[in-house]
Length: 150
Image (cartoon, rainbow, N blue to C red; front, side, top):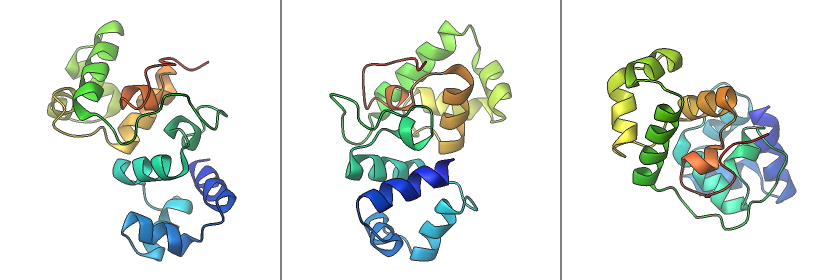
């Protein structure tokens, strides 16, 4: 699904894989691996694609068919993202240990995300959003609403 959306967005903007790879600062073969789903696209590249084409990460993740949100921020706010992840975790009544277990990551990673030390990794973000119907764009601080997807 992700690769289909990446390809669709790129082609809608009449951009080649080479063009987009240059925009991301990687090789064409590196970008091809994202579209072929042989590599997980790093969050920093997802953000560049989202910002370049003004398309929600939720759309790229196939969590929504909405092609554009109002009042979208460029980039991400790691501090706000960390706060939102912590609020989500507490609302779900998870400890850091429990959330780490669910996501198959170390508790220290959850702690670093919540402190805003690291951006949430793509796979972790996708897993949370898919499993709990929460917006990736909301968690990353790109939008304020909608928080939860239908």
